[in-house]
Length: 281
Ligand SMILES: [Zn+2]
Image (cartoon, rainbow, N blue to C red; front, side):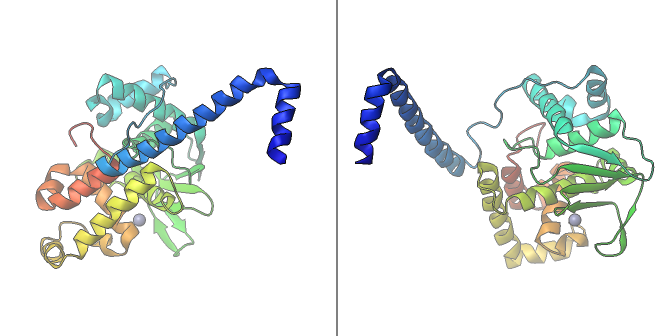
């Protein structure tokens, strides 16, 4: 009855709309099959069919100079990837609110370097802007946190949708690039991992799959013994699964060669989890 009524209505009042209606339906069908294919591709090859749509944003010249002169990773990228990275940094800065605490003035350098670390970690992803973060709070140095009544270098606070950083420690983390300590990477990894809870996008699915591979590998008695004996990863990693992933990411970026030699399987799963095929990683 209802169908008939609609058909009559279309014919009576708007026959000229029929071709458009077919168009919309066809588009819906094509789109549906594309999504099915895309999902199949991502789970079969462990990477998305594509990871970037359009490049139309660009940071200012002065910000680009900061990227070029102070962020090594940027210089290692191909021209195409440089443009994507530049776009992503610009987008990240425009989406997030940067707030200085204890009289810290937010400079272009602070914005660019924090955005660059965030976008480096998420560079293999399509969804790269950390949907659980709205605000980046920056203290000049270690700050007192009421979560455990202690001084922190960094903290991700999902309830306040805030990533909190000590600028002094953030800078040290990325300037000393081979000590496997990088508080920026560490905290952004916490945010990325929490995003997979309830996330139904391809990046979250890939994260969950590779995370399970990592957990299975770590549970293997032989690998466990090797982890205990070599003490390759710092003890903090073994507090819980979140800390393990955050520390793994720090090692991945700061000493990829050593990581690969010591634990090739874990390295491979981390690389797939991040879909990271850039700059020699
Ligand atoms: Zn942590």
